[in-house]
Length: 337
Image (cartoon, rainbow, N blue to C red; front, side, top):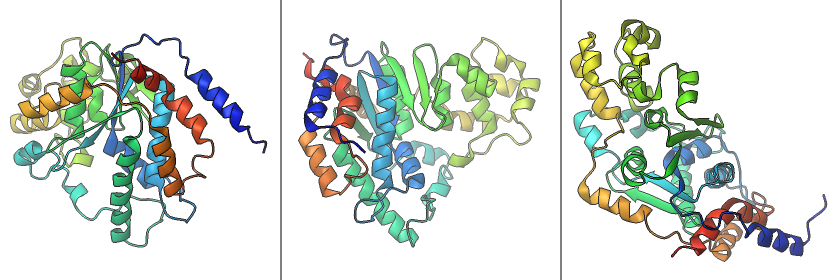
């Protein structure tokens, strides 16, 4: 394999420092990433090891996954949101079984890289802590709010903070589909598919503006939220055809069509993201963070971490990867007033 000379890397990096849209503002096109969703998915399936044979699939998979999203979606800002410590206390208060299965000894990794649950948990905690260090060197905004789930933070940013921005939400969580409209899209990293209103209807057969009502009836097994027994999508469309209409439905519309009032209201409170219930202090913190100036890439610190963690084989052309991935955001960060 022919190696590219170092001066060619430098030349490529310099060329990539000259995008056509230097006047673009940081919040014109914002990619918001579901951090824990992305990390767990990568940790579960990526078998990458470092030069010492230690599993680092969570770190490598995460960085490459967000790198692919940034390169393909070309955002002016990227915000990565993790669940805050304590998760969603509000949802657990009204439904104690919320995400109960995730709080037991569940194995995440599917590549048999760990001999025990304890070893897996130790690696998971180490990798996610180390990952936050990598993210701090990149021109990204990282956000976690105590006792608030990432879903609520992402929804609040998209619906109530950056209301003039083109928004792209990245997650495999179908709950975000309910937010899709002409301004907000959802990028599925596993399907490599962008969900706009047309694509939502094509894939799910339910219009985006009523998708939450479908979810309320169907439930969410991954979050331990039961649906309405005997009511699948076909039954819902047959018995409540207004779900296909232009009108945005309310929980009362479902109740008026004979569905159990207690289940519908509970599931709606648990699943709706249009108007999230978080504290005023949390909202203020989110507003301040997403409107802060973007920190520029600290390339030398990222490179040091790669060397320390012996990830050289995972990023054989590190300078090129950093330039191709983060150049646009980095230039915008450097031109902030």
